[in-house]
Length: 111
Length: 115
Image (tube, rainbow over all chains, first blue to last red; front, side, top):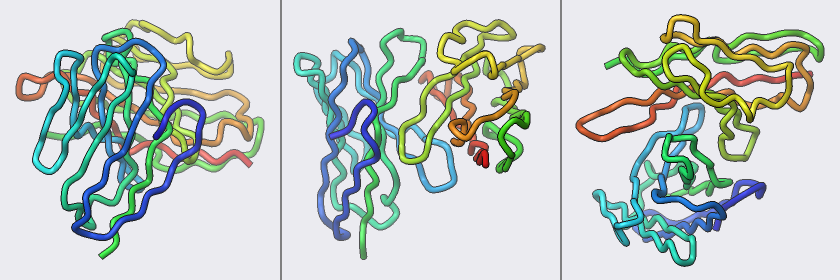
């Protein structure tokens, strides 16, 4: 899982496998953002889940949020090589998009 | 639709030198953010603007860092007397509505190496 001052974690899987990345956060938030960052590019929002949603899906992505345990997860179904990227969770305690990012997970999907 | 653009893409300095980063947000976005991303870590917010006003600059590391957005469009982040610890990627982001959803868009970043 990712948070705080920890350095980037690494995860390597085979194409076609499912993968889940976890995020535990410390500050109160009503929304968790998940971003992906490709090498040499800025982060891009891929899915956003609010506190009134326990689960949200977008294509092969599925995000969950458990506010009681202050944790969120991002799952990718049938991962493809193009899913290789760094994935970050981020919280927004102020509600003004002053995002607090986790340390990130480097996902590598091998053919 | 053009995205957030930043320049330069790379900068290499000696300690003590000054450097400026420039950001052109997506047209019509009134909110602009600067983040610092050390290697192998997540982005950390430095400062953000609404139009030309600084809303929060409490996370700027020191008085060596300054940011302006004089006309509420483009923005410049400046580091005076850079230190090796400033080595990082500096990301600019702007925020606006897209298809009914408020979203923050990041530029490609400027990679800074301080020797």
